[in-house]
Amino acid sequence: MTGTNGSNGHVAMHAATRLRQLLSGKEIIIAPGVYDGFSARIALGEGFDCLYMTGAGTCASKLGQPDLGLATLNDMREHAEMIANLNPNVPLIADADTGYGGPNMVARTVEQYHRSGVAGLHIEDQIQSKRCGHLMGKEVVSTDIFVSRIRAAAAAREKLGSDIVLIARTDALQTHGFDEAVKRLRAAIAAGADVAFLEGVTSKEEAREVCRLLSPSPVLLNMVENGATPSWTPEEAKELGFRILIWPFAAIAPAYEAIRSTYRSIKETGSSGVNPEFTPSALFNIVGLKEAVAVDTAAGGSLYNKV
Ligand SMILES: C[C@](O)(C(=O)O)[C@H](CC(=O)O)C(=O)O
Image (cartoon, rainbow, N blue to C red):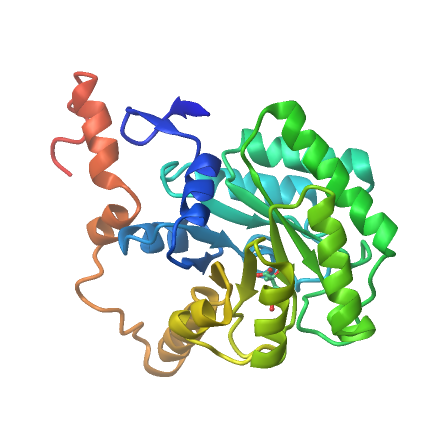
C-alpha cells in the first residue's frame, strides 16, 4: 500500500508494509517503548527502525492510571495515531489489549488502527477487565473466544486490504502452563495472526521452545524491564529465535526517576537543576521545530524568522 508521507511530502509505503519487510529480513526488530509524543520523538531522533506504543505507559501517561483495562479503544487509537504520524516511515507496533470487546469491536479496532497509520498491533486472550501481563491473578478467555478475536481481526485486515501486522498474544502461561499457551498461539496463527507473543516467558528453555514450536511464524519477545521475563540482549533474543523485541518501559522508567528527582530538587533546594542546555528552543527542536518553520517558509510565510 502507498500513502503520502506527511512529514516530508514524498510518497512512502504504508508503515505496515515496511514492518512486513523488516519481518522478512534477517535482523531482529528492536522496538523501544514509547508512551507519548515526546518519548516517540526521542526514539525517532535516535534512529530506531520501529517503535512500540506501550499500553501500560499510555494508561500511566494519558490517564494517570494503572494498566487494568481502563484505556478504551478511543484512548489508545488517538494516542497511537499521534505517535504513528510523527514519522510515518517508521513502523509503530501498538498495544491493542483485548481488542476492546467482541468480534465487531475487534474488527473496529483493527480498522481504526489501520486508518491511524499503525503498522502492527497485539491482541490478547485476557478477559476484558485485564491487567498488565506481569501481574499475578490474570484470567484468560476460552481458546474459542481468543480465536474469534483473531479471526475477526484477520477478516477486518482482509476487508481493508491492509498489511497491518496481527500479533496474537496469549497470557495463558501463568494459569494454564506452557503447552496450553502454545496451543492457543497455534490456533491464533491458524486463524490469521502473523506473529505470536507468549506473555511472561520465564526461562530460556521456554523461550527457545516456543520459537521452535511455532516456526516459521515470527515470535515477539516482551523484554519489559523487571517483569517476569529475565533480561536478554538482542543477540541472545535472536539466538533464542525471536524476531521482534519490545522494551515497554525503556522511556517511562527513566522518565519517572528523572522527573521525581527534579521535583524533589525544587522542593528541597528551590532549583530544578535542569541542564542549562535544555532551553525552550532545544525542547522544540526535539519535537520538530525546524520542520514546522520549513513548512511556514515554503508556504511564503515569515512568521518564525526570528525563532
Ligand atoms: C507489554 C505491555 O502490554 C505494555 O502495555 O507495554 C505490558 C507491559 C507491562 O506492564 O509490564 C504487559 O506486559 O502487559
